Length: 174
Image 1 (tube, rainbow, N blue to C red):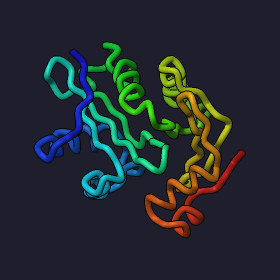
Image 2: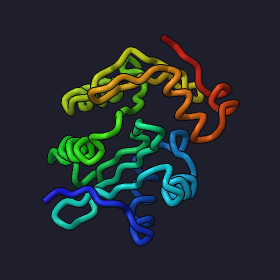
Image 3: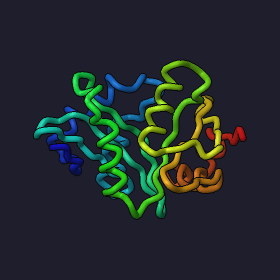
């Protein structure tokens, strides 16, 4: 049985370990920043449980009716079982009242990036045409049954930090 549950304090070490191994240092925020936003109600940290075993996590940031999937990882030994796609489906059901989107590196920048795009497309997400430079990395926005404008995107990041931070670190590419 596959479930998505709200993370608890006891889950933090296991989630942090996967977070560190799944994302390069250049893409990671301090884990304490993630847990602080979660504990303040600005974000959701969800654990993915398969047959009562920790199998992955989602970290979502909320702003108005938007939900940014900021981080999503499945444990290496649990991959290739369809858990990622099924987990995204459960997440979409759980947050059906939100406009769900995520960022991927430009899918033309390499094979891994293109495979990532294809995975998300199989899960029902699509490129919405918005491209940004986020901290100097070219990113494309993928959405699930919604659209996100550059203004929405900037407002979300302004809420996450502040407007000057967003304007300094995010540029519209298309």
